[in-house]
Image: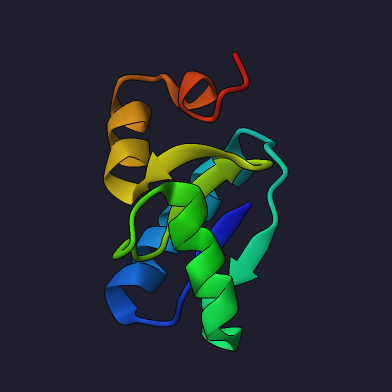
Length: 86
């Protein structure tokens, strides 16, 4: 799951994450936290960070990381490890 929100920086980050996932044929589900506070709170709870902002990336309920961590994994060609698929 990829938790998302509608801010410009966040939008460009989530678009980048989606583009990379699609380029690797990795299926994902978008969860828009702007629909309600309980969804945002769930994302923050699962991330273990009370101030976490999207995009936050999970494999099922397993927390993978935030955009910066994802971006680092892309640069190191370790996306599958980041996503806990390898």
